[in-house]
Image (cartoon, rainbow over all chains, first blue to last red; front, side, top):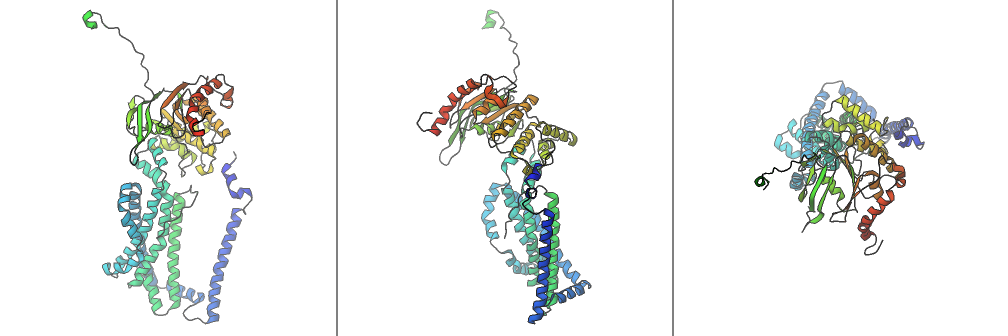
Amino acid sequence: MVDLAALDRPAAKGRARPRSMRRYYVLMTQLSLLLTLILGWQWGVSEAQLPYFSRPTLVAAKLMELISQPTIYRHIWVTLQEILIGYFLGAVFGLVLGFVLGRSQFLSDALQPFIIGLYSIPKIALAPVFIVWLGLGMSSKVAVVFLASFFLVFFNTYSGLRAVNEELVRLARLMGASWPQTISRVILPAAADQIFLGLKTAVPYAVIGAVIGEYIGSNEGLGFFILYASQTYDAPALFAGIILLVGIVFAANLGLSHLEGKLIRWKTSSSQAVQI
Amino acid sequence: MTAILGVSPPVYHEVKKPPPAIDFRDVKLTFAGQTDGTLVLGGISFSVRPGEIMSVVGPSGCGKTTLLRLASGLVPPSSGQVWCNGRRVDALNTEVGFVTQDSNLFPWLTALGNVEFPLAVRGVPDKERRERAMHWLELVGLSGFENHYPAQLSGGMQKRVSIIRTLVYEPSVVLLDEPFGALDAQTRMHLHHELLSLWQHQKSTMLFITHDLVEAITLSDTVVVMTRGPGLVKEIYDVPLARPRNVFEIYLEPGFDKAYASLWKHFKHEVQEVLLPGGAL
């Protein structure tokens, strides 16, 4: 049997390089760019004698020192908890509300001005409000993370549901699908692409929310650690803290991509995330 | 009166005729407008016999597609009634299967998954579901493509999947809304051939919407000609061609010319206004 689908792939037409070779080149380019940046940083700082810019070697040494002591794990754990709880709650509420408003024209019309109003508020700017309301502890950061991730998940779920082809819904109903079946087998898969985009886009915002919250007022967490390093002019610790943050975002995105790959194997085109 | 005369009335043993598969009874439909409504269908009455293929032809905008939406219960008539197998259609009618203009396959399911879908939601057990779906895929020559996603199939293949996805659960009436409109002439002919073989195989009732007279003659037992909006039935024509038909050389079949000529006689007045306003064709 001729594989027609294979004929449609550009690779088979001899235009592009074979896929594996291309990926290899991309990876090599990325690695050399990273190396150039690190070497450039190292060399530039030692040549120009810039104070407080630190150097990759010093940052790496600091990082090693930090992870060999228990203190940093306490900070990481606090920030992780804020992110996980806030993100989880935000995602759940965002999914549910996005789904309900996405399916109900009436509620969507009725709540539109309120949502647009909230949409235009920079969520991070509300962090001081939550510190006042909820205090210096973890709950104020959880609230900021919640708000930041809730809106991204909500808007993307909402627009994903709005974009569902109603013809598919009607066909499924005519084929005898009950409403629960139509939701789980047609509406959710049809919107899955956009929903996942929202979930993924929300991750860095959740991290930003937690860290900003900690900058504004806290006595533990990675944000507090970075702020403290800044106030004591400890540049290597500052960068080490930021690298740890990047690691968290990176790991979370990797996990979500993995989950997405398991759930959406048919993906043909990429959607554009609704941003805040 | 008969009792007075002392004679009992004769008893007729009526042959129980099955009710029409679809019965439109003086159906009117008005779409609500800003100030007043637009009359889309102005009193349609005709019925589809069980087991026949009936085509509805008419100029664009005459409400052909609306007929199918009425028959499937997606739209209620403004007045009049629609009946299906002796029951009045007043809600979503799951006795019909609908083949839409676009293939409308579920892009997240494979060809097999799409064909299995209606069986799955109807609770057919896994094994039987798979066997039936594979059987239909084989009938339309798609064995080997069952694990392809719709995006990996050609337009003709998608259309085949879309048709068998409807036939697989054996709805008593299949409604087809210009399903072959967007395909090239070759693929179309092949699909006409396949549709007729599938119909011979299953003998389901089909109500087929098209604006192509040749397609209508090729496939149907009966052709309904509709007028420009508001849609009315202008003519109901029985196609005299024998079955099975050779769709590839349908114009050579005895009676084709005559059928075409009589249909065109009714149809040309409907398209005339569009082509040459006020002029002759």
